Length: 390
Image 1 (cartoon, helix red, strand yellow):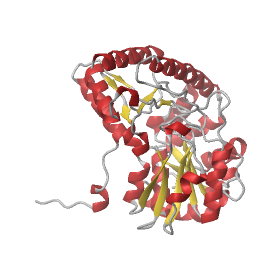
Image 2 (spheres, one colour; image 1 turned 180 degrees about the vertical axis):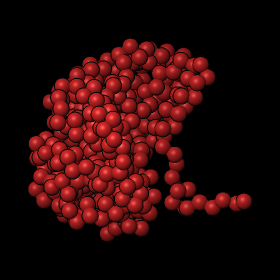
Image 3 (tube, rainbow, N blue to C red; image 1 turned 90 degrees about the vertical axis):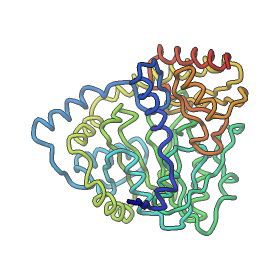
């Protein structure tokens, strides 16, 4: 039989970050000692009070379908959180709980982007934004940001890429992969362009709790004139170490949510009932576990920055948020793909090539420091040795 596949699927590649982690697992299965810095999974356990709440829900028989947008207790808790933390007021009916943050992003894109619509994607940017736009038959338009400018966002960077078909912009702060936290001035620049050109903004804020020093996370929906045109996207994976729980959410004006809910209900029905009970406990319970994780990440980002900067040909700025370092490896003379290949095959350290995040990411690699200090120190030692020996 000759198989035929949709052109929109053939037009995309598998997730590069998943591929890196899969390669690390293959080598481990073969008995190799591999340090995997390619993924984005916190190395901390989910806080016990969250686990207990979900376990109690399962024990009580809460293992069936729930309302498609999510249980009302969780949507109320999210609304309270958005009001208190982000300065944006949403009614619980303007919130949809999804099986993972990625599902929230995809449902929003499929709902809002029509065939031929253009979506601005800041480059470098997370690996799944462009493929999800392509799957919606939209056109991803990359806006290159400059490493020499600290990957800063400006209106001057955005405007040359606007056309009559531009429909939306995807914003990620704190940023994956760069570790940058957008300033108020940068958000104002995005907001000004969005208001001028009547654009939607999909604001991915999944790393909002992971910020360091004086960095401050700001939600663009809180700026004047932006609530009505912003889809705020978030979840529980990173802040609460709940990646395996697959729980995200989106918040948007009621007319937008009404349409997104069609996609959500016809595709995934609802997020897992007991996961949602755990999420209620996450929001309502003690927040000290987040502070403990952030303190560890803070220590580790210095360890990684200092260690990488001691390697000839590598220059690593100090991440402001999230748990990724994005070192510049152009001084080694290697491309990002060649560097990542060298490190996995010779050093047995898995990293993600910067080109996976867009052309502006070339000359960099992404390393996650969501792993132990000991493994990070060992990885940096291996990286230095491998680069020196080539």
